[in-house]
Length: 335
Image (cartoon, rainbow, N blue to C red; front, side):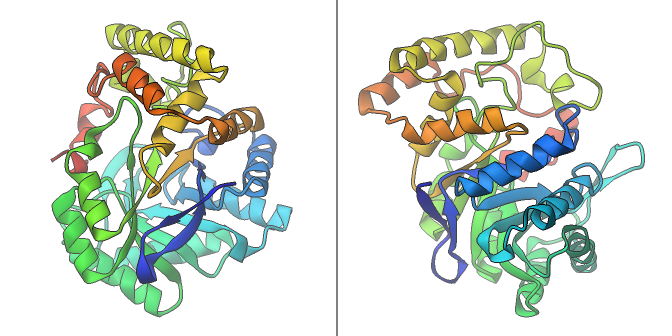
């Protein structure tokens, strides 16, 4: 595995060129099989994917407990991986999204539960899942800083926040990385956010590099989803939006086939090519999808390839917003 570094100075964290996002293993994209999920985690770690990303609200704690079982069952040394955890999202017993809580006391309480569910004594990168509009980011990061001093957390991370919030947070404590959606069809960070993180020496962990499967080359217009699957409500997977977006995938497929690789590999390789400070998070739930994603590391994109990809899928070419309206309102990164 090629190595990359998130952050700089005291905030630097070593990483593989790819990380593993575990969210899909806890029902966010429909049912997942636990034994296969654990086998996928094992294969990812063996391949050098050091960053394992989870959230305390994925499956209402299920995702953290799954990762904890995997680490114990597989005998993975704690120091050999970088556990990244998002916190703060509030959910009801019916799985409804209720908002965010990033008050200092809530930060510390959430971490206590996270450490127990994971069965570990520290978290490598701890981050609020979204900006809590009722709590200054300085207070949230200040609480994480206190947890770092106490040895329970190693680094501060952020997720889906804009430039002003990034600067304010970084002034309190050095930020290691910003976790944010970035793909061929989600390029909003390029205008202001990416230049700011590069100025400050903050890395990017890019999720949604395959747009939740939309640009993987495996999605079809007649594929069904269930009520627990995020894509059932995602604007980009609806009606005419879906038809348009899949037409972009076909343009990308012709480029991939000419290079003898898959659509997913081209899409991931494109993100990798955008900078050494970017680590794509691969949301594979199965070993075959993981193997395909790892193949992107062998894809060499020339300037001519990148120009051809840009013509096939221009910036802002996608139809539909990346989140439903209610969830989009929580994105400080879009304001």
